[in-house]
Image 1 (tube, one colour):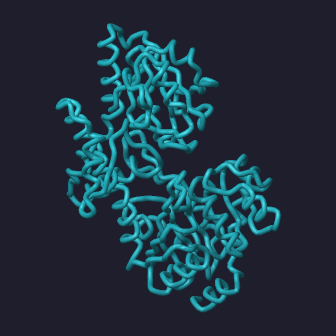
Image 2 (cartoon, rainbow, N blue to C red; image 1 turned 90 degrees about the vertical axis):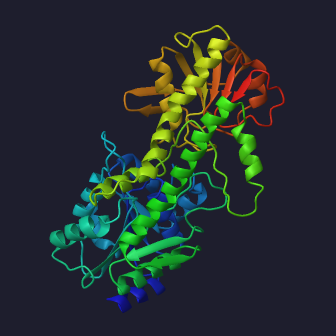
Image 3 (cartoon, rainbow, N blue to C red; image 1 turned 30 degrees about the vertical axis):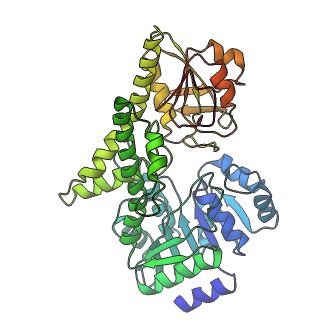
Length: 437
């Protein structure tokens, strides 16, 4: 089986399937097709399937012209019909792994995908989970589902592994193609074959580890590392504010040290598909072993409190101007979770908006990247333009996303008060009414 698959990879005869055509799955499918592998994308959302098949891109990290070319050339197609999985030799699972209402892992998308694959799995296939999850998912959840549903044996009839996604939306240097890849699989042969697939597709180094659990834990470590360090600077940010010290100036000074220090920055909270969620997967799994991840949980509590803290700071600024937050007109600048992207998943700006509404504020927002958003029971639409009149009619402006295409000089010149939670206005000269987190 190994030799046959390695030959298919070398000859570009391997047919690839990607389950889930979101921020991870679509870029991966595009790269596989560009590398010469016939690729089929699967998604339950028909509008995504239709957009892919018409060559219309909806992911920022995918180049429009490249998508159109590989679709028109027949190298990439999409479907909602899971029976098409029988045509794939390599199947990557790239579905969401959110948290439920109790902040516990919701692996229902992974489970349902594995069940659908198991019904159609054939001998000589490769299955790789890319969705971020807790250590043990591949071997404890996916393997039994695939074996029981197909009647095949892992390692003998099919290969199974885990290779964590590494996607940083908006990153102008690193993307799916050139970011190093980690592979952990069940058995040496599976590891070799899966690594060969990614080596044939990607430019980045493929680093293999001993088993899926190591690769799963590695992914959690990447983002928990950031969560903990951001929690540290957020806590120091609150302390520095009491002491009358600029945390931003402190960080700028500290990062002059050429070793032993990496800068992290405070803000209104954590957003995106990984950093706010991954530590919860680890703390949940740790309880199975009677272990409490105290440092991680402390950082999570600090980061979770930042939206409320930002609103408290805005309230203090309004109080200084003899105004109440109740009834105040608050303009929020940016709802994307990071600058220069249209992704608002888990955005702390939305939590800031919710906290403002709880306090009775009249909230509007402007984001040149996010025309509208829906988050549970909350939906809003961006004001059409950031004009002088809009700024002057606001009681306070809160900068919650550091987009580079916002006229911050105009904000400083026309807004009565500005709370900049991202230090996005650091180059602005008129800082008379600007306060930085």
